[in-house]
Length: 252
Image 1 (cartoon, rainbow, N blue to C red):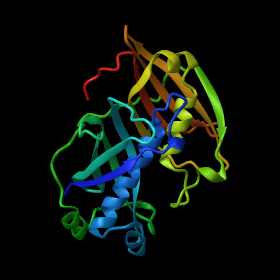
Image 2 (cartoon, rainbow, N blue to C red):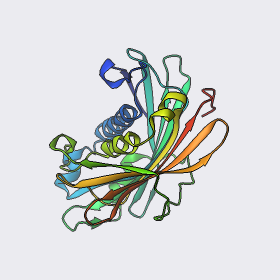
Image 3 (cartoon, rainbow, N blue to C red):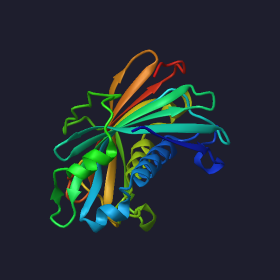
Image 4 (cartoon, helix red, strand yellow):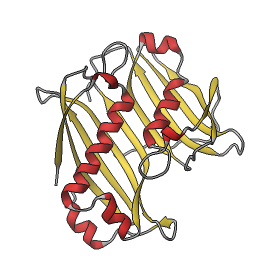
């Protein structure tokens, strides 16, 4: 089944230009997925009581237009596929005139919390989610570990980064990724597409390096590749790609 959620953009989720931020959009999408699960009877507490949980594996997002403060949007979501212990969830974002202004796909891993490893999705969950075979993105980036680093910034995870699941919220990674993008890009370009692959969990107190390298540059777009790395162990925690475009009339 498809599920819809309406909301109004608050001022505190907008940047200095009055547009909602990309990280705020991720929050809205995440909240909508939780409300969908609540609606069909598989909320967080029920899953945990059975020793299960969902872990977000990756995002792929395209944004045609960023709504401004006090504008109303509608987010539509559905689960498109279950495969072994993987699940795909899709999102479409509409403005107040029902125009599509963004879309996103996610991949989730179904975890057995007690065993600390992925587990096959039970049949009763299959049934209740009522899958709709309609995927917005099929291909995801095949990230390479070796990238040419142009610049980096260090971050220490804070108490405020820890969420209800007692780990660093997935939205925080996007904050770290975007913070290292050069200021001149923010002045002349708009973030239109991004993809994030989560590799390893980040914990409170970890010191991380957010690294960036330029992938390709065309007349009206710049692509960056990103890596979030543990400063001590050098282990890769997250890969990402961001695409910035000057032209605002991009079809989603």
